[in-house]
Image 1 (tube, rainbow, N blue to C red):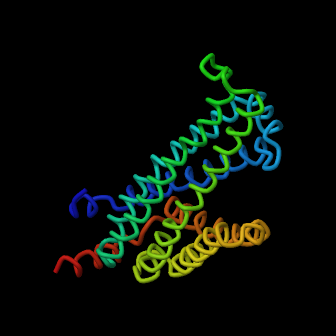
Image 2 (image 1 turned 45 degrees about the vertical axis):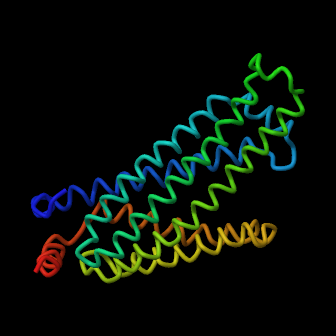
Length: 242
């Protein structure tokens, strides 16, 4: 995407980014709700029964999350292009942190899907007992959760960088920039607490989710409804180019 392309229609990219970001939010919440409905953290047998009885729901949650990761790559590129006039290096940092998050979560998704493989009653799994398969399936899902928390550590720095860029941009609201920075701090606290004090993290997450949800939803809706201030974006781009 060239500077000339953006001068023609920066709003197209902003609103496309907003729509993709909105899907990411919805798909992420849906996948998490599916896991919370089907996974019983302390009971491998109940988890296995839930997944087998709701296999289609499990698959839809998984595929929705895969599409979320695909769209996240597009969002990273578009946000880099939109915010590059503010600070190219920080915009590049935000994009790479988001890419790192996507790659880690994509790899962790293998553990999510392997649970279904283990419960598929394939012939090559007959050497294991049902209890063993159920236990390993639950372990795989827990490893997916660990991978998710690792990926969000990188995403926290993407949000912090994005918040800084939006706050300084002049063509997007400073309030949203501040909210995204707060979301970044919340993601960081959540990821670190998951590994340092998991019992505390379980009680902390509901409080952290609210500012995260408000910040990301505000950004997505603003990009869809208002987009960017084109005149200010072009002015910033001219200053950067000169």
